[in-house]
Structure formats: C-alpha cells, structure tokens
Image (cartoon, one colour):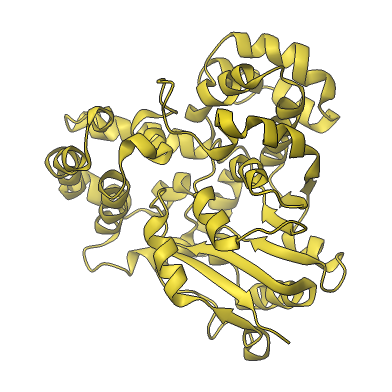
Length: 390
C-alpha cells in the first residue's frame, strides 16, 4: 500500500489489455544484431507481433513467441491467420498497413475468422470499454487503439492545446526541415509548465510502457527531469532519421502508416517480403506463457537467439538471475541475446550473478552502434550479449 506499490498495481492493471498495436523495437536493428542463421531457433516476447513476423524475412528455422498478455497473444494469432489465409498482399496490407477500411471486416469474416482459435476469436469479437467489438478497430485505425495508441492520441491533444499540430512533421522534405519543425514547434512544448508537471507524474507515462521502476531510472538521466529526457528521445525520432524511411515517426506524428505507395512499413508488410512471410509463417509458435517457464521446459543447448525487449527493466535481481540461468542453460554455441533498456547502460552487471554473466560477452561497441541505429528512438540503450566459447 505504499505509493510505489500502488503505482506498480496501477501499471499492472493498465497492461491487462492491448498495449501495443505496433511494437516499438526496430526489427531491422534486431535482425542485424541477431545475425540469424539457417537452423536458428529464435525465442522472443511476442508483444504486438510486428517483429515476430518481420524476423521471418531473415529465414530462421523456428520462432517461439511468448507473452502473458492475452490481447497480444490474440493479436499475434490474428496476424498469423491473416498471413496464411488472406488472398494476396493487397488485402494483407489493407488489413494491417491501412487498418482503417470497412472491407477489412468482411475479409476477417471470410478469410480469417474460420481459422482462429477459440480464445482469439472471443477476444476480437468481444467488446471493449466503449461497447464496440474489438475487430472493428481494423475499420477505424487499429493504431489509435491500445494503451500506446491512446497515449499518442493524448500527446497530440496536449500539443494542439499549445497551438502545435504534430502532423506538421509529416510534410518535411528533408532532415533539415524535420529539425526546423522540431526546434520551432515541438521542442518548446516541453518547457510548458503544464507539460513539465504532467511528465513528472509516473502514471502519465504508463501509455509508453514505462513502469514505475523504469520511470525512476529514466528521470535520473537529466537534472531537468523527465520532460528533458522525453524531449531528447523525441528529438532523435524527429531529427536523426529521414521520415520517408521511418515508420515509427509516422506512427508518432501521424498515428498510422503513411498512405502513399512508397510509405515506410515494417518488413513483414512490405510487398517484396510477402511471399517469404506467407511461406514461413508455419514456423511461428505463439504461446501464452511466461518467458522463464518456457525456458525451463526447454532442453539444454536447444535455443539460438533470445529477444527480451525491455522486460528486464521491470525485474528484480532474483528474477534476472533466474532468467539468465535458464538462458545460459538453454543456449547453443554462438547464442545471442538482445534487449533494450530505458536508461542507457546495461542493467546486468552487479545484478546477475558473476558466474552466469561471465559466460557471456557484452558487445559494447556494437551495442552502441545499434542504439544509434534504432529508429524508434524511445529507448536509452540497445544491448547485445554473445555466448562465449566453452
């Protein structure tokens, strides 16, 4: 019943439903770091499923996607069924790339629904807090749904209250124009008294997926507080990458993917990858399970690549030790682990027992490069660990 305890409970409650209609880890950075080889078995936290399907373009032998969030499990299974059974790339792109067309509901009923498991079908045909069926989100822009989508929508409202339309960024024709828009329109918002007060409330950032423990780590990065940290992260998103090649920026500033034929998209939605994704979708196994429990049920030296997202930021030392003990036991020669952290440094030294962590090589220089390349820009650090030779 402490303040911190109540915040943790509130965060857990907020994460019971759909959080990420789109995952916010850059899959191309992930695949470069993982260096997936034929025969590899990838284990990842499922989240919104974008990266699970995108990893198929690297041709792994198997992907096991685990998650405790039933909404995310239903989302992943919907994507797998859609990839298998929608008739072509156009209908697949309309469903997930546009995600705001009435025709998607007819496509769901004809092509996807008959192939969904009961749990996923109940989820999508069930009603949300507004009384609408959840599947209807694909006729009204699913990317405005979920905890993150609602947070982005709230951020747009706050910006417009201060006379700024974030969509102005989408009209930029160069990185120089992007920087000018950021510095003249977006950056000043973070100096507003209301915005500084709002960002000082940990609960206000639940929509970014930042739990109280992560919030404390982030807030300590800058003496000016959380508003300064968020301004720096938004600056990277707005200014470090050409918006014509950054679908994360389109999601942040436009609340969806771009409508143009050449708009940036996640790898799994690109037409040139569609045949490979469809051909390989049977390699994905989606499980409603705890990551550590899945590892405990796996054989010694049976897995090759591990994707932890930012989940470790939420963990106690005991949980980290248990996780890495199982990763080390199940890792095959040359195994790689990737994860992100809210703050810049790796959180493992001093928290995972030395006898476990000493089995792994931290690729510090590569991690720094991948951090800089991560187009989503919301994380402080990307980290790569490689199993040392026995």
